[in-house]
Image (tube, rainbow over all chains, first blue to last red; front, top):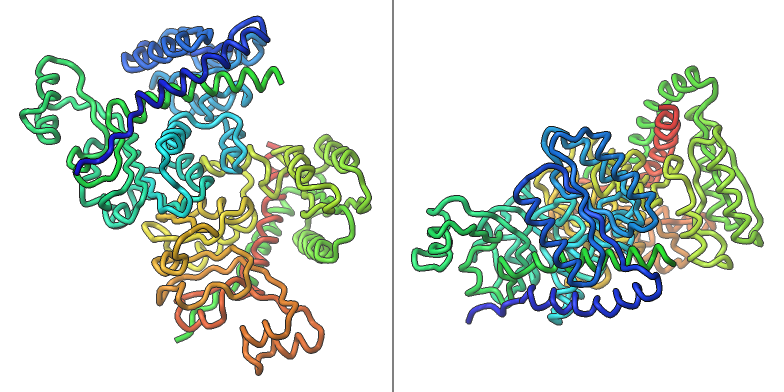
Length: 308
Length: 308
């Protein structure tokens, strides 16, 4: 009995459809649409794709999306000046600096840039003030991926109260805020990571298992209690044909896609988990589309909150 | 074989002794000692005691401690004006608003007042920006009680890496920040609360069990794995003689103390746990003194950080 598929594409479409009349109402009141400003530094191909997807989705929802491009050679000061200008621009509601910044700038600059974004416009929820409000259960702008997972659970009527939720991964962007949001929804929450002993046994206790570790197919059936809800946050490109065959089998359309030189991505959850989980998000088509939908929702919220 | 006693009094004394030369060095450099300003609104007897203890400990460590008193009838605006004045006072390094504010002001005002304290002077670590920095593993000022527990674990050479830590309680002041700090020290962390199913069984898996629920003697031996480290954050006054007898037995000096009309407090951990835990913090004399020591440490850190 294969797992129920938790359809992120459909849920994201529903969220976006609900935004449209709210965006229209804001636009009518404010005389302009809510605006999302994306700062893209350099020419990383992955970032180009992500920014294009955000831009398209934003425009479809009726937002004004403005892309600001800086060359890979931009100095830290230029990036920070751009952010300061957006902070001060009253017509800008949401600011997103596409991560990662070019490696030449260094990890420290990325933190400085994120910290510089006005909390009121911080649609990624990276600023410590927004992270703190989240921890305190009073977020105005929430982190896009974990908030998207919560939306999915709610709309799929998956109970969290008193359930054991196990989060694999403790990143700032997914693992930690995911744990805090599940806690807020009255789950008992365990956070696991690379130092956890016997990860599989701990994961196997979960009623709700969230995998956010970035390792393709790492979560095998031995990690999963029969009937558990499994949320796969991983988005892992597979560069190696053997990996694709190993995970999906020689007959899989993904192998054909790989051979046709199409990009093949997979989550952190092994395909065999579909045979024992009660419900499962696919990759692609699970959490990914929800992340973008929540970014749009945050942009509207930022616009409404700034207008008071 | 009774549990090793984790002596919070001795550890707090060691932390405070280490502060003295640092406070002297700051005073010599700055031409004045680090200063802690405590705002006490109303005449709650418990708050009076807490403030007196903080004042005495601060002065012993060489800090300048200034108590600002407002009557219980003070309006929200007066409390907020006082905080604003302290924010702007360059001679003030740390601000502590003693909680709870009078009930007449309402819970919402307390939140507004805490949010108003400059993050740089927020020695209680209540401001969302400081909570966020804590969640991101880059706190400058940390929450006093959980930071004190970590100091105790480190100084008692209790390993956290790869251990299962279970935190009972999800308060903003103890439970959540405690979980985040244990996670930062590479423990696998489970957060339990009132909605957790089978609390005892979950707690019993813990290598390190932190009880922060505010229920006297709630954590009985069935919650504790033999040999586990048990940290008791509870500070519960016992108003009822039967409770004292029930927990400690008729022959206990605590019953005599109760009969002599002395206040009797106990933790969240039942006395019988001492027979099976590997190590245990007593109440009193465990986590309580550490909280004050960390407040003094935060005041010095705030003073040093503000001076750059």
